[in-house]
Image (cartoon, rainbow, N blue to C red):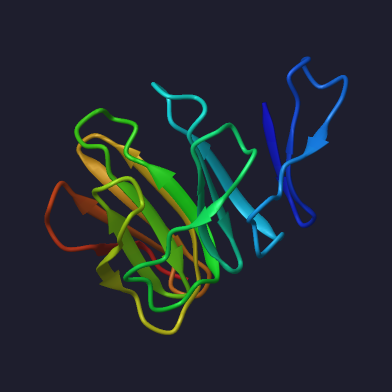
Length: 151
């Protein structure tokens, strides 16, 4: 089990009785999201206010994975858990990015303008993006994002 905090990543192997810090290579300790590869649980992704980091050894070491990102203040991260793709999504500021290759590179999906994206979710056939200033957006499969709830 892992915990992301403003002091870095912590890991427990005994159900939470004892925790160890796992920050080798993590150059920004403000962790905003953690995700574990479901089929390879030693592969862990950390979203931080300094970019995306990937560990292939259960958090023992981290490598930055920010190729293609314009900003690195990652506010949220999610994996396509619907099983349709192996895509990862991150938000930085008002921009949404996708990685189709295990976070090796990122491609801009959409820029939502002058806002901060705070939440990402999937529920077939829809994907949702929650923003701080412009409400919630919805997209059906590969169409454009449309406002669902406006602030």
